[in-house]
Length: 131
Image (cartoon, rainbow, N blue to C red; front, side, top):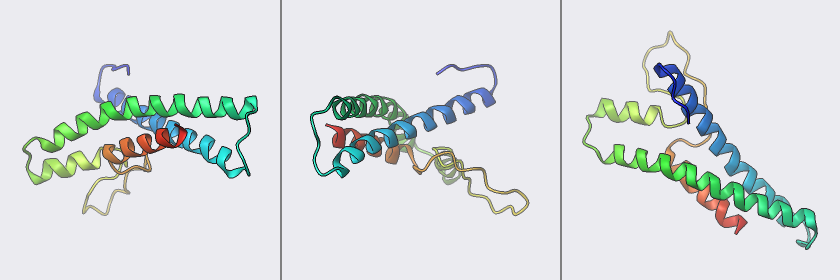
């Protein structure tokens, strides 16, 4: 990640990394699911290459998600008041915030995983399928 001056750049980098990890999780899962949807997995070069790609992408997704999960987990263990915990949960990937204000629409969803923990688990599962 590259951190630039200002909070907007850091938020953009965080969102880009989130989307990158999510894409890798889904790519690894898709490649393996496509192989196993066939009647049998052959030893063709294409199938072998796809399986190798799935393992590489899955490993990279796990590495990246694990680092983010460690930060998320350490923040969860730290003593916080309720408002701080709501703020932490609202910035972990969904982009949604808890608000009673009706004048602003909710922020766009930036990930299908609600928390870093779910993203990390999904990355591990994708890698497990590939292995």
